[in-house]
Image (cartoon, rainbow, N blue to C red; front, top):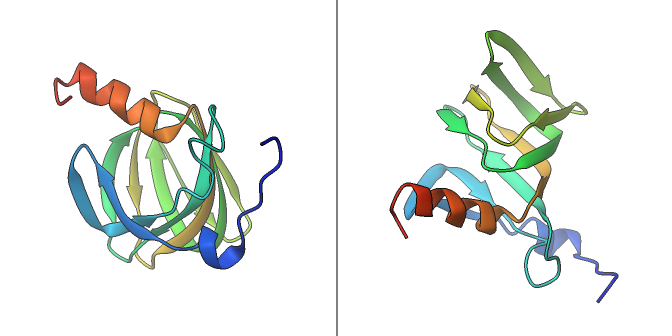
Length: 128
C-alpha cells in the first residue's frame, strides 16, 4: 500500500521500549509506521520519563520533533537542550548522552527500519 494513516489514539499507544532483550521502564515507544507498512523507515512516538539518563550510540539516522518537555543531549563535546517545537537530528553511529529531568514526548522518524538496525547491532554484539 503506498498510502497509510495511523490515527492519533493508535499512534500514541506507547509500550515499554525493548532493546537487546532489555525492557526500559523509563522509555516508552510506539512504532506507528514500521514493517510491513514501510520497508525503509520507522516512525512513531517516544516518551522518556523524568530521570531518564543514558549513553547511546544511534543505530539509525533519526529526526525527532519535540512535542512536550525537554531533553539535554551531549554529543561531541557540545551540550544543548531540545524543547517543545524543536527538531533534533542524530546521525547513525553518533555516540551521545541523553538526559531529561522533566521527561519528554517526541515524534520520531528513523532510517533504516529501527528493528533492522537493532538486529544488525545485536548480531555484531553476538546477541542474535
